[in-house]
Image 1 (tube, rainbow, N blue to C red):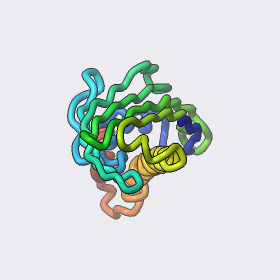
Image 2: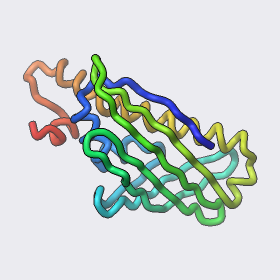
Image 3: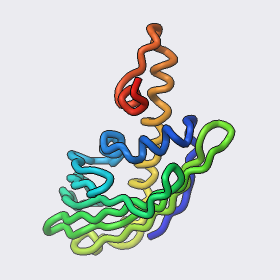
Length: 169
């Protein structure tokens, strides 16, 4: 299954780039993510709990970032094993482009599954994969844009959360 889409994010490409490399942000954005540890250089170990149709599984696996073009593009790939439920693997090619309101994040997602989950049929799998990709990138957009809204609403001008740590404020 392949899916292509884009999001216009109200933040500079530098802020979006820093966020996409930040494990705290990635963990927050992956639906069902229980843990994400590691680094950009070595990859991340992840534990994700999901229900696909009638099948519930806890996937453990590795997420790697590759084909990095600083500030402009990255490929995110991952593979997880869900025990008797099977496995899921996929990737997203992500590109960033400056636009008037901030950054256009474009992505192409490719996903596949095997084992018991694959027996559910392509319609259910494709629908689930689309939902996961859409959810990740919507959460990512909210994570990047949200703190700016909080910051603007904060009377003391105090920057909050991961955004504060991200920009060193």
